Every structure is written in C-alpha cells, then in structure tokens.
Amino acid sequence: QVQLVESGGGLVQAGDSLRLSCAASERTFSPYFMGWFRQAPGKGRAFLGQINWSSGDTSAADSVKGRFTISRDNAANTVYLQMNSLKPEDTAVYYCAAVSKLGKGFDSWGRGTQVTVSS
Image 1 (cartoon, rainbow, N blue to C red):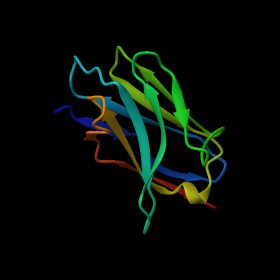
Image 2 (spheres, rainbow, N blue to C red):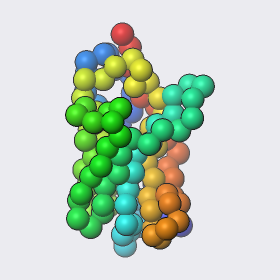
Image 3 (cartoon, rainbow, N blue to C red):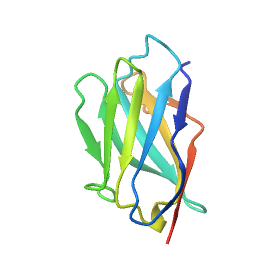
C-alpha cells in the first residue's frame, strides 16, 4: 500500500497563507483521486476537497471554497493544499488521502500535519 506523507504544517497568524504538501512513496503512484481532510480538536474529520489525478479537475468543500486550492504535480507524485486567509478556526490536523480503486473511497491515508492559526 502506498505511503502518503504530509508536510508544511506549522504555526501561523490569522490572515497568513500556508501550503501543505503530500508526497506518495511509490514511483508508480497513480490514484484516481487525491483528497485533503482536516480534524479539529474535539471534532470529526472533515472533507476539504479533492483532485482528479488524471485530469486535474478539483472540487472543494463550501467551507473553504475561495480560500483553499488543491493542485498536483504528477511527476513528483505530490499533491498540494494552498491555504490563504487562514483563520483560527482552520486550526486542525490536516490529512491527505488517495482513492486507489473506484468505488472504495479514500483507502490510503497520511498521518497528518498540524496547522495552528493564532489570532
């Protein structure tokens, strides 16, 4: 099973931007979709958006639409989450995930990276 490793998290101030990366361990990595999720303290995991690995088409949750953008670099086996105008309520652990088989949902997950936004 492919390993996904997130990076780029940290402590930022409200209004700042941050770009998260998620790199896959396999050189032949070719999922159907890659997605980003987050889990805030005391809350469930929330879907942020996803990208079609082949076409690059993206979709985003209404909660972050216009502020967060997903992109990918197929050659580098990496997906990115660009986060702008960060708010304290964006504080969470951010996870990337992959859909390797259609109909199975997100079946590979990274361990997450912490993002903390101070007011």
